[in-house]
Each structure stands twice: as structure tokens, then as C-alpha cells.
Image (cartoon, rainbow, N blue to C red):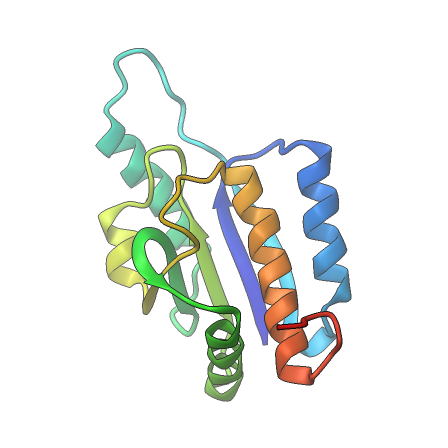
Length: 156
């Protein structure tokens, strides 16, 4: 199974790249984590946020296959504990397909992305910077995997 983090925004700071790479390389091949960047729609002074959202959403969905299990990262989604994320990972593995985690741009995810999502997950009720979300996701996936495997990384 592969977990793809599909995120709007390119040219992340080096610490984001390093953090994501560090956790991704710790994952086993049978549960690979990959980050795919989607270019942000061009913003200008009088830009229509809904239109930008739709453009970015179309690009995100263009990277999703029909068999992918899609999880939208949404502030109004369901919050999971680390143990619940570990349970999710086990369920996703049993389904046999790949998982696509969608991170929207500054204006959030489009309605089309939310409709395509099989699940909506909230990392926090706080508004988090998009670069940080990538690192948090990579670390939490690694932590949940360590719970599943009984690895000492996670100590509850």
C-alpha cells in the first residue's frame, strides 16, 4: 500500500523537505509514504477564492485514481487519536488499495474534493501552516505505523 500526501503548494522550505523525507524513509516498502506537490493557482488582487479552490481541487483530483481511498484534511473533519490513526492504517491495508491524503491551498479544499473523499480528517481545530501540516502528517503516519508494529518509537 502507498500513502500519497497530495498537497497544494510547491517550493517548500528545506526543513519541510527534510522533515517529510526523514519520516518517509523510516516507513517500510509495503507502506510507502510519498508527497506530491500540486502548483497553487495564481493569485492576484481581485482573485475569486472559490474559483481558485476549484482549480486547485481539479488538479488534486487529477492525481487521484478511481481505486484510491481518499481522505480530505479538513478542519471540520473527524479528529483521530494516534491509536485511531493506527486502526485506520490497518483498515486501509486490508482494503488493498492506495490512500490519497488531500491538503488544500490557502483557501482550503474544493467541494469536489470533499465530495470525492471517503473520509474527512481534522488534525486540529487550529489553523496550521500548510508546510507544517506535511511534516505533522508524515510523523503521525510513522507514529501510527510504530503503534501497529509495537515499535518503541511511540510511547503512550
